[in-house]
Length: 397
Image (cartoon, rainbow, N blue to C red; front, side):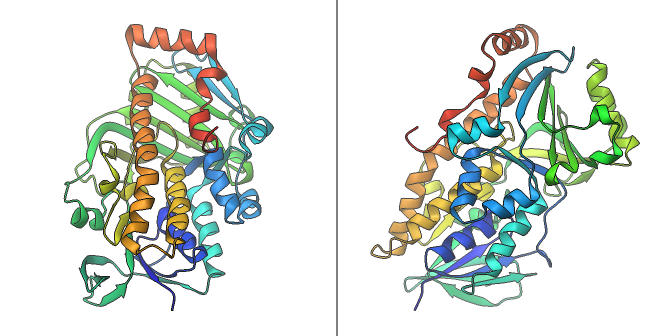
């Protein structure tokens, strides 16, 4: 009889965990509180490290069918519009790291993983089912749903996001912290934009106390735009997807160059609309016990929520799932030891990415002399600063 994994959360991390566990020979029951499996309309970036995880699961072709693959990353000054540095992607990334750099709509990646799970008879998906808590007894873990039903498994993975209920019971470390940053996001059809605003690359605009990023998704048919500024927290942090006032965004961009302001204004001209996401995170993971204890483990944002300044939130969840697969496949070890192996192999990398993401935010939003130094370094060193072999490369590279 196969061992059984219970998964809390049906986002990208939860689906990836379920797929990984099934490939390791486990039966899986996944519980998602929402009535339907879906993702919000926003883009994400997948570095070569993330794409290699999907390749290992046989998902390269499905990814190619829905993603865009930018040829370069261009960094520009948000104040002057002048280029600061450029990093070749495309074939250069493939040659160096064995996988492309992809940009994809969150919903498309979510659907891709869901379709992969449909081919796994050992996986059961249960939407509309919230996990209220769990307890351990007689060498197993039992979860209790909000409706009062109890389900038994050999292990539980909390992949239930930033406000993880599993984390609160496992670690009891309180709520995430508000970063002081707000993300305005919009997704628009490229065909509805004037030609000069369409893009097939990633462009990052760096300015004092703000930055913006734009890139293609959905095979290049749509463009994702994100503007991150400093601001006060909205009243309800847990409701992270808020209506946005374009006038607030325009005020935040006062003093930036006309090229950036025109690109932002083009969203309204194409009948797009902005959403507002308050950005929250936690301090970097402090040790393996922050990611697994006994038969319970955390994955993705439940384990290591981070600021988006390395574009690695989804990527770290995919890497977690890949490592979870290797650990769960160690059938000669007991389950708590397998989950500890998972945590031991993940916590330091996750903590490094969390710390570097926060550091990047300070660099991106620098003011005064630090901003001048940043821009000068980017002009001088270019791709040497933008490329990240420690992150994108295979272990040992």
